[in-house]
Image (cartoon, rainbow over all chains, first blue to last red; front, side, top):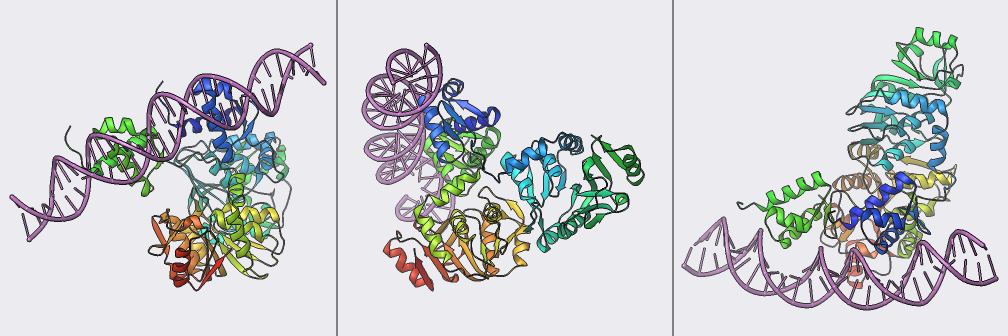
Length: 258
Length: 258
DNA sequence: TGCCTTCTGATAGAATTTGATCGAAATTGT
DNA sequence: ACAATTTCGATCAAATTCTATCAGAAGGCA
C-alpha cells in the first residue's frame, strides 16, 4: 500500500468514526498500516480540535449530548416512524441537480436528513437546524442557502429579511411542513410570521409539495398559508382516515401515501 | 517532455488535486518533471491564493478535517485568554437598547458569549454559530437577526443574500473580526466573499470597531476589507508590540488595549 | 552583447513526522 | 483488594520534509 498523507489519515479516522460510532487504537493502526503511537498522536490532534473525544482504548464522537443539541430534534423527527416514512417517500421526488426548498418543521427536518447524499442539490431553507444537517454532511456538490431573518421558537427564520431573500430566489420544488390541514381552512400554522414566510416559499417554487403526518388532519392553526387546492401534492402517512383521504384526493392533484 | 509554463504547471497541480483529493510533493515532482523545490514554490503560490491547503508532504483541496462540532469554536474562542480579554473590553462599549452587528469569527464569537445578558439588545450577525449562542440564552428582550446567504467553511453567511440583508439594516455599532492587519494593507481576510460581506457590514453601521488579537498584526489576507484609517476603533490585547501600537494610534481615532 | 529580472535547481540546516522502547496509568478478572 | 493485562504518554533516534539561500539558466530590452 502506498504511503498516505497525515491529513488523509486523520480524515479516514473521522470517516471511520462516523461510520462506527467508536474506534479502537489497535484496529486503526492495523487498518491504516501505521504504528499505534501514530494513531495516538492523530487522536490527540483531532481531540484538541474537538473533532472527537478520546476514551480509553480509542475514541468516540461527542459523548455527552448537551440539552439543546440538534440530536434531540434529530431523534424526535426520526424515531417517529411515520415522519421517517413520509421523508423516505418524499425524497424519491428529488433528483440530482434539482433545487429544492425546505421550510422549518420536524417533517422537513426528517426529509433533510435523507437528502445529504444527493448530488448537485441546491437547498433553500429558513431553518438553521436543517442547514446544520447539510453543513455537517459537507457534501461538496451541494449548495445550501439559508434565508435570513429572525428566529421563532420553532426554529424558523421569518420577517422582512426572510421574505426579501425568498423573493430573490426560485426553486424547482418546495417541501412545506404545516401545523394543520382541513378541507375548509386549508393548510395552517399558528404563527402569523411563519405563515407569511411560508407563502413566500410557495411563490418562490415551481411546484409545491406538502409533507404532513396524519395528526395534522383536522387541526386549524391561526393563519392560513394556502388552500388545499393550490398546492401540487401532499405526502402523508397511511394512518390518515379514509374520509380525509377522499377529501384530499378531490382537492389535490396528487396524494402520496407513504 | 517539452518545457512547461509555470502557470500551466500550477493548473496541472490543481487538476491532479481535483482528481485525487490530495497530492504529494515527491510524486508531483516526478510527474511534472521538475524539482521538488519548484513544486513547493507552486504549492506556496497556490496556497496563498487559497486554491489549496498545504499539508506536510503535499497539499489537499479543502481545509483540515474540521468536524462541525460547536464545542470546537467555543473552546477555541474562550480558552484563549487574549480573546476573552478583548471580548470583555469590547462588551463595555455596548449599552442596553443598542443595536450591534457581529461578523463571523472566533473573537466576535467570544464577544457574543459576553453579550447574552444585555437587555434590549438587537444583534445582527452572519454567523449561525453566534446566532446559536443567543438562541440558547433565550433572553426575551433581545432581538437576533441572522443575515441569509451561503455558509463558508469559517461559518460566515456570504453572497448576494447576505449583502441584500445588510443593505436593509442599520446598526449603531459593528464589531468586526478580521484575519489580518498591517499599516500598508489595512484589515484583510483570505476569503473574497467574506471581504465583500464585511464591507457591507461596515456600510450598515454608524460606528466600526475592529476586534483582533496580536497575532493578526503583520498578516495580510487576500482581500482588503477596509484601510486602517476608515474604522473608528480597534480593541486588541496588550501583547501587541510597541511599534505596532504607535502605527495604529496614528491611523485610528481610538486604540483600546485589553 | 550586456544587463536585468524571473524562474529553476541544488545544497544545507532546521523542523516535522514516525516508530520503538519503557515506565506509568488505567482497566479487568478473581 | 490485588495482580495480570492492556493502554497511555514521554523520550530518543531515524527518516522524511520544509525553508532559506545561493548559483545558474532563460528570456526581455536597450
